[in-house]
Length: 454
Image (tube, rainbow, N blue to C red; front, top):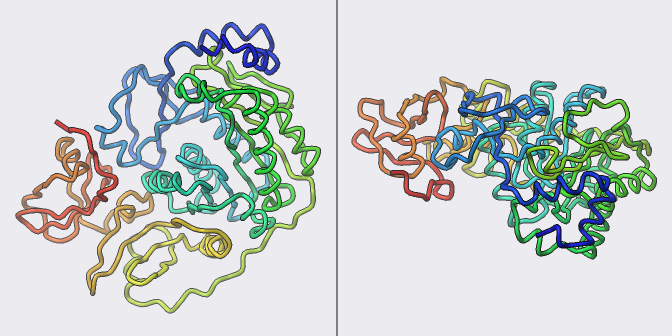
């Protein structure tokens, strides 16, 4: 039990006040809560008995944990399973967007993004405020974790996202002054995850806290040059102690050239604890896990980088076909037989990013050509900008939807032959090639449901 660790209890009292410690320690022995955040650009999913998350319009506290794997709407990207406290970073982003001048397109970096909760939250907020005029670079430095990020971004379906795999220093040295907003949910000692991760408890020590605090300062120093002057960095951790939180924010303000924007004048949702420089969410006072968040505005001078205009290659019939698959203007990018589509208004910015850091995906993977035959990519089915008339749609019941997601054989009966978009209650799930008496599934093997669906 964490209450037996005297150093942890002392750190907790130092961060939150001694009077709050008993309630927090008692809550850390309880089971964690369950929450989801809806995708406002896809079908609304109902969860009986749910309650709203106070700081997230689309967040919902659930009475228990359903089997998300057996819900077609989960695979269709209609919602994301995310801790409610983690959603507070999205709340802070929305407060920032209300208060700043928004260039077009707005450039945002989610620096430590995997598995994608804050990226998908930011997507919804940015699209609500900016429409199509934003690019969100979603980065994960650890190569083994970036695949999950790319899949979750694809399921959410926003083509304004570019997924990258780069060290923070790569942005600082290659994209100076590029970003208007940076989300830095930095690696930490994980005190806020004690209820969900027993390993976080066993690995906690004062030495690890000091190590994490030093690493966080390095990360901030490395990425800071990529933030334009007047730009905003939202700093967050899933831990409680002052060394990784308020003291690092104070260090950044004093050493990097910044001013702290909050908590002065900020509206504080019930249960959220204001600290000297930010906000702390802790079990016992909120239903979710631990989260700290603060906001810094860059005062040190840094001109905003102008992305050089790229000259698209000569369009061929393949490009023209892909353009017609979307409801927005896109720039097709051809690599061999593969074609992706990047929203036209951010195509130059996406290309600029790709010249300087390793890009895993950008825009929407549209598909590949096999001879003259265009084979749609699985990600195309999930894209929120897909033209609804681009492909024939087969509306299937839940059992058939799960069979498709399990990669079982399905038959579409009287549907026309060729590529067909499988939908459940209007939600696209993926493609099959209908041969009449059977269908060839285009659903990725690595995404299939592995558990028994019966």
